[in-house]
Image 1 (spheres, rainbow, N blue to C red):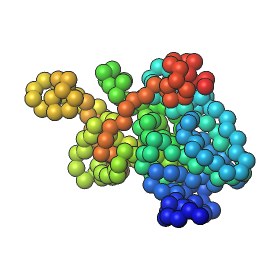
Image 2 (tube, helix red, strand yellow):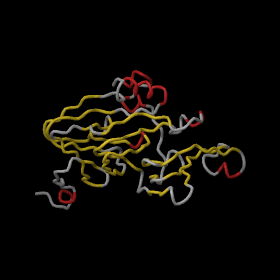
Image 3 (cartoon, rainbow, N blue to C red):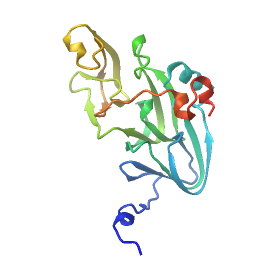
Image 4 (cartoon, helix red, strand yellow):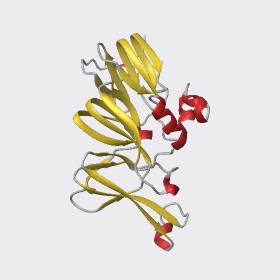
Length: 238
């Protein structure tokens, strides 16, 4: 006999929802007539008959964008009948449902999306020094589920209420209607507050909508390393 609360606490939660949280760090996707795109390597378990098809970084055009920017999102297509469990290094998971709407998401925060969601890699700034700091986001639009990861509990800031500024790697996403610009500060003591490099980059937000900010920074990974450890174009085909 085995005694303890472990199996009761960790017991699978039954649900008929396409996307549902088993806990704050584990996503359960119920597959049926719907397939799902998930971050390559995020599968931790599945039950039933589930097939995986590696999708590179989402097509030829997106693949070359990823090679140039390092901001590719290596995805795999998951199809079949069963239940798929996804996670990303025990990060917190948030589920969104878009209904003919759009968001812009930091590529490092993308975990999974319904196939009804269209996505593309977009350049969100022109400052060359920021190309290694998250200046390429994943624009998503359409109707369906999106699962994102956050480091800790994020805060949603209403940019219409006051001028809003944030560290690029702390920004998880922003909603349609939000206007973004890049702000650079060079020289002076205040520029040493973050990073100690003598210059700081911030994202400045305005317009109407919400910006989701997490209490930690994402580390930019090479798309090839995420896909399988190889750099450049070779990694994008894994």
